[in-house]
Length: 325
Image (cartoon, rainbow, N blue to C red):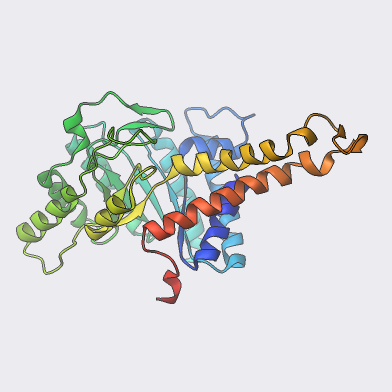
C-alpha cells in the first residue's frame, strides 16, 4: 500500500495541490496483511486503515502537502468497520484535537432512503463532535467495486431525483450543516467501459442545486457538496461540467489500478531478458540481475506511471497549483 500512497503524495507535491487519499474496506484488510482473515468484527480492515492513515499523516508533513484522509463505501453489513474507525478517530481527537480521518463514507443506498437517513443522521451527530465529515450515497453507482456488484441494476436507479437529494440535504443539514457531502447518482459507474456504454448526465446535479435553493429560499447557488463516484474513463468535459454543479470530490480508483499495473507491464517489457533468472542475461551467462528484479525497481515504475495519471486528473479537475491560488 505504501507504493500507492507514495505515488499520491508525490503527485500532490508536483501539482502543488491537496490530495484525497481514501481506503476501502478491502484495501484496509489488504494493508493489514493478507495472512489475516477479515472476520465479522472487521478488525483487519480497521487496523489496516488506521495504520495507513498514520503512515500517510507522517509522510504528508514531510512532503508539505495537505492530505484529506477518507474511507470509501461502507454498506450496512460493514458497519462494525465504521464503528471501529470512529473509535480510532475519537481516541486521536482526544490527544490531538482533530480526527485521524478527515471524513468517512456511508453507503446505505441499498436500503430505503428512510433507513439510510436514520442511520446516517445518528453517525453524523457523533462525527460532528470531533469535526469529522460524512459522505452519504443515494441512488446507485453502477458497475462493480470492492466486491459490490451493481452491473445489472435498473437504468432508472442510476439517476437521482431532485426530491431525493433535497430530502437528504434537509435531514442531514438539521444535524450538522456543512459537515456532509452527497454521492448522488447521475449515470456514473465504477470501472471503465467502452465509449457509449456510460451515459453521464451531470445536469442532474445542477437541477438538484436549483431545486434545493428554491425550496429552502437560499442565497447560494450550490447548497450541496456533491461527490463524483466512478470518475475513471470520464471525459474532461463531463468532469468539468460536474464541478460546475458543485462536485468537490471525484474517485478514479479503476484508472489508478491500471496505471500501477501499466507501469509494471512496461518495466517488464523493457527489461524482460534480465528478469528470467537471478543470474544470466544478454550481457553474459554469469551476469547478476538483482538490480532488475529488486522490487523497488518495478514498484517505482508503477509509482511513476500512477503519478502521471494523477497529474492528468489534477488537470481535469482544474486543480493544478491550487495551493498558490
